[in-house]
Image (cartoon, rainbow, N blue to C red; front, side, top):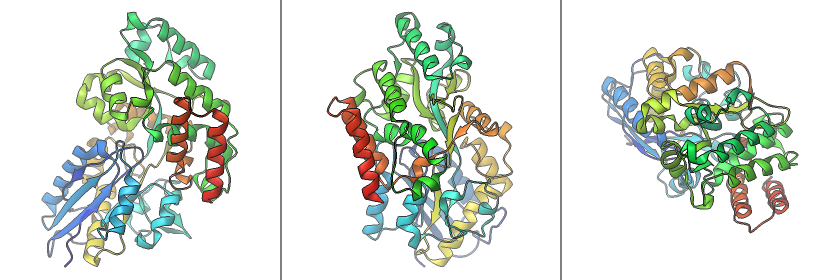
Length: 427
């Protein structure tokens, strides 16, 4: 029997390593019996490494013949490039993560059809759109995530700013200027901490806010489009300029870790453009700060005020080239994870995910940021995640052009024109 490994992943950063699982629960077809099986899972969420390891250990305890090895790449490293390297070298993971239709197009020949899994059947409406081809489903939604401007509640209160009053760009600009004028009294080094060395922050997340309207918030419409018009490029430019002007400097030397851990968690920045995935990091550094002192503001978008981008960042994809018993063990694991009572408890209370599946109780979400994002979702105050429908690597390339703009090496019109030409040449 081939001994394999497997991997998980999501949307915005990271890498790590996990261990093993197996499980009892709905849909389990017997991973606890028979020969030893090792699942090699490869994914892109480093920030959840410890939680994945705990989950794997729990599953392995109940399924002693299954061992799970979690590998992750992210947090500044390019997961998709690493995935390509593994496949090209013959070191294929048993399970890997893909971010949507553009990446699925490259790996559909390796993707097991999971249409009939219980973990697929219980997925929420719309969460499978980015991983479905001809009515067949090739991945299991990891979770939902949302992002915006994560802010320090205490700093805002001391500055006399009511975050509920911030809806438009002008509202935000006024609040930023108020914070900047009180930096010394508030004890902050800058209003923002813009991680300019992370191309995905500008190319994927910030650009998504301003591109989503022209694709009607539909990832598949973006995926099928031969061109991009950049109808809201002026709005994106002024938002990037605002973050850069009032950020701790130099932004091009600042990475994700510095932004979240060094500046925001320690109170040196009043707000940062990030998402609910930073909660585990904040909690590790200061549990009280994470739970009591952090909120999320929408990034202003004319005509869509008060909305945050929410979407499925990644899908688990089972490698159809793996041995049959490994494929079945992987299916058992995901049915346990998303459709069994025990697995749901682990996902909800240890991983702090915003659920993408039925049978989860939002009151049991431990993360304050995830609860806030989930409220936006329940009230339908959301913008689509169309960046998963960009041409492959287009977001990173466009992000690199915005870095050239921040460095003063390229004007904004050139950035937009380069992005448009590269989109069209990729389609």
